[in-house]
Image (cartoon, rainbow, N blue to C red):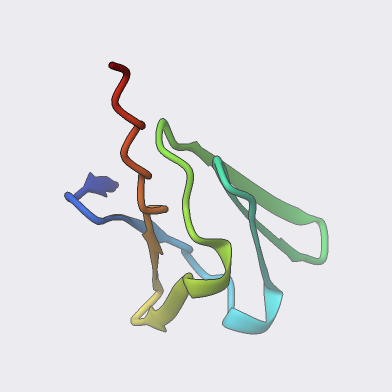
Length: 83
């Protein structure tokens, strides 16, 4: 599930039987990639964003097989007015 808020995206993923140590989370300005691997079982989810995110401020937590990732949006700089 992806929730878009005014200042951030919140992504919640059910990871099934995978443990936190089996997860790999990769963040770029426009994409979240979550991969999991345990033996022969592999899993991957990609989430693309329309607004860029602050990669240095991303927070993640794992609770009861749910991975929640909060990705703050980059502040948009106001455009200079033309005269």
